[in-house]
Length: 498
Ligand code: ZN
Image 1 (cartoon, rainbow, N blue to C red):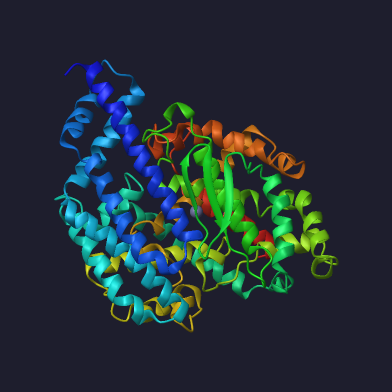
Image 2: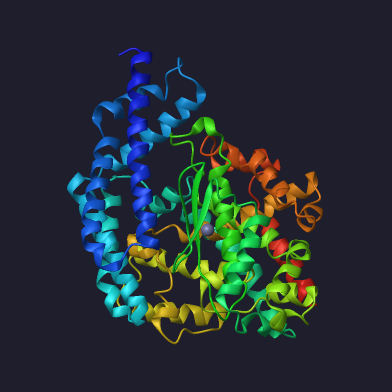
């Protein structure tokens, strides 16, 4: 086959795959947002069938051979070579799994999600435990089929964050432990900042009105983005001009929906800002989970929790809730937004203690896949670890092991990227400050100036380069965890007058 013939086959193939991908994304979004629960069995079976069809297309032997050749073909452009290499690597991984096993896993993952939700609502780990066990066994089998030199957990870590493994994560988490555990202790012993006014009664209609304002400030444009509500906020997309986010309103917490929105819209921007020339191909995606989280956590923490951000936005929130916030001044509000208090729920955790929530999940995952921990009594192991690292203990499984969705569909190895992303973000902020006055942009309703910097230095590349290459291009140096630790130490030393 000539290069031209191969390119024609290749173009048809990626178009077909992106069509299935789009259908599956929309079905997934629908399931998580509005689909009636009683239809789940019917839907799950058919979704698994579609995923199986997608699997067959992705692993079509003729196409695997074509991308294998294109990835090294000097006659095609660099972008196509890179895309072909990524498709090839993915196909090789997928090919290791027999199709019936793959389809059975999709089905199991869907059922497991439903059981997780039921268990969470009942705060009963026993409902979910047999499914968790099955999902872990299935994932172990799927990964060991790859016959890789790496351990099973290393393979999973690498799936979400290419080039990462337990050794590197151990170094990373040890650095966090070394400097953050004593810092959290000092903060816990310092004079506490009163943030109780954030947790009064805030009617949800009022919160939604403020949300309309916030989405405008963020420039989350309805022409390419849409926000819905879910139990567990997430972002999904079909292409650069169709990005969906969700949020969750809590009556007794005025900032939860706000910060989760800033976070999810950060994810949406990443997808929206990828160079459109990569549309429909694998390069049109964030390069890694850690890089994706770096963009969302950058927006949430390094922009959304700052005084400058609220200099512009706080008057609107005050106007919406005069009774609750009328007498609270800006500094008091911003300080309250940044308190560092050990808590039970990861998604509501503050910036300082957040990485400890991740460390706990990392240690449990390592144990589950290296055979030192089992699903039996895992709710107690979880509670013990919270006591050890954060000094708090969940009173039931809903605020303990059942709080997160990730393990229900077998996404092990994903959590560590959250902490990594937060650390990447600190280094990006350091670099951004050299180029522009971040505070000036935020306080003067020019949020998108910050987004433009992220687009220019990180987001536009999509999957074109590896995460470590992008880090180097954007900041001029390799990833260095000290930017993150210095940032947290400086911030919390000042906030708590340590
Ligand atoms: Zn996120």
